[in-house]
View (cartoon, rainbow, N blue to C red):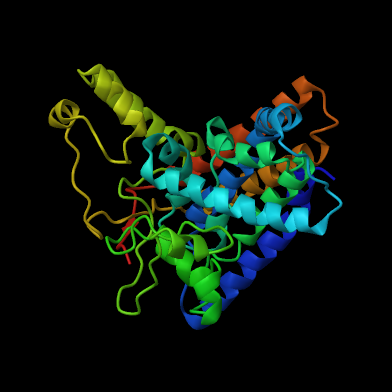
Length: 364
């Protein structure tokens, strides 16, 4: 079975768990969902999967080529130990990719999509980038060189991704000993927070042990609630812009930097770094928690219904595309995928065009 088909089968489970979380939050009077934000997050996940149909041919193709030509000792996919070690190795390498996603601007440009939501709930887990394929594959080549078969690699990658779904919630509190070893909701809430004490911490995918070993662990503090989003808020429901905003900002600074060294450094310095001459010519306001209200344009009932109907159609088409991707002719696949992207863009456009002045809510 194709991994895209696994995602299709998992989709009803994802949506059911989101509904359960919403119900639990309603009963506890701890609502963590906003309609437009939820549509945006799930829609970006759909976009990521559709784009992945094309880009996995590139990333897995590179992995297979390296495995075929540079594997030191090809391992057997029939050995349980190979699967266990491969999962641990993948999680270890994911830690370093994830860490680079917060410390290197080029990788942050891809990873930022996952952090743009100013809410934190199970739909946030589905909010994935469409451009991670550009460079992320580099981090996993050691597994190919070590001889991990492509099938094993693909399966453990899917396991690592699916595990991380449940940790995106504010409805599950601390879990005692589990928090010390594994990535859990408390640990991952810290990772998504923009507060100084929490910023750029807890990168582990399945195991939080990596953070403890390499000095990036921070526990959630009872007296310091997390604030979510990014330090340069997106303030848009446009899924295309969500994927391009940081690339555009980096290109702007690169283009305007006087020094050729700065033009290169823009891409590889930590996120937020800017050449001095560019920062002087194009200043940006500093970040202060709560200074900018959450992005929440008013969404009248008619537009909400239109957005929901369009979104439901987009889900249906996405499922058909993912399930049949390996059977469709290239032009059919490209056309159907373009249709999905257009519908998701339309949902964002509808949600941004509420009647009257856009409404905002105070940052929690």
